[in-house]
Length: 100
Image (cartoon, helix red, strand yellow):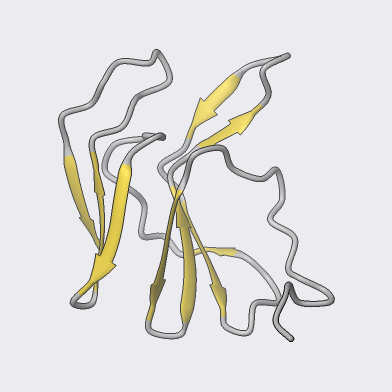
């Protein structure tokens, strides 16, 4: 029977509305917001990676060009894609970003 791993790697701080992709043997989480509704939100450029099976998250250094969240994302052909989304002021972005 499937399900979550018994001891999944904790992603410090979590992310709201990030992108998610697999690249080679990495699980990648990119962009998204950190913070809270009670304090303040920061919109991230950072891409975190975790080798599968996932035991620890690290900064991959392959950051988005524009900090964003609530964007469309996809992966394929050896690339990850982020399109549109919003910045921290909720302005709609008209950008397409490709990595790694």
